[in-house]
Image 1 (cartoon, rainbow, N blue to C red):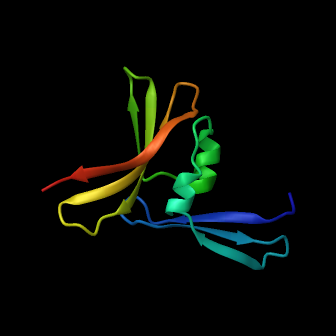
Image 2 (tube, rainbow, N blue to C red; image 1 turned 45 degrees about the vertical axis):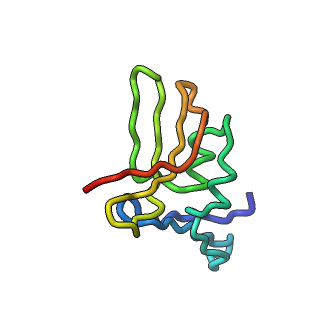
Length: 110
């Protein structure tokens, strides 16, 4: 609205950060925000659109489609410090491309 521009710098799918850099209408840096945070995860609510989620969290590191459920799941890697496990934040969309649920998911591997 005011002519500001926001650029996304994601370290997904292997990194655990996504930065949103906002430049004012004068093209002077206004803010840099790491958006993959618990506070932003808590703001993801049922009914939100894909665009609203992407503007909040950035492009997902992984997307999967489940034909039988008619659902798409977006995932962001948020922690990989523990040997043998990765933690993702996932957002599930229905056929209308609206959020139906979200939350953490832990993947175990060898």
